[in-house]
Image 1 (cartoon, rainbow, N blue to C red):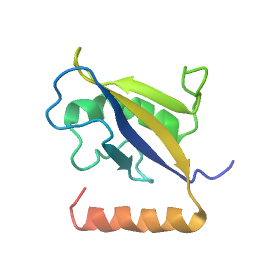
Image 2: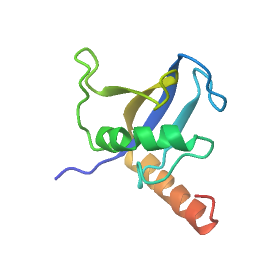
Image 3: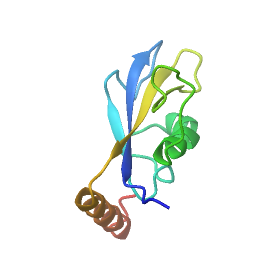
Image 4: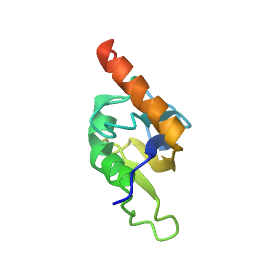
Length: 113
């Protein structure tokens, strides 16, 4: 079994109506170890809840239903006039992975997550 060395980045790519907390182009990164288990600081709860299963799938390497971009997911927030988010995994070197793991544990100890 190969090691997973990824982080997941989500970026708002479309805003169809009013969305107070977020703007097009805004991005969040999910902690590498706990992928979808921790909501990134500043992300609204509704978006985080909607993205959770897809962030986890992307982190684990599952392919999206997008034929032209199977490694990228496009998911809408639950509002009918909401936002569209691009979800993509980024491969990390062993060094970057270890650094991110240490940072996640530091944040847990400091009760920042």
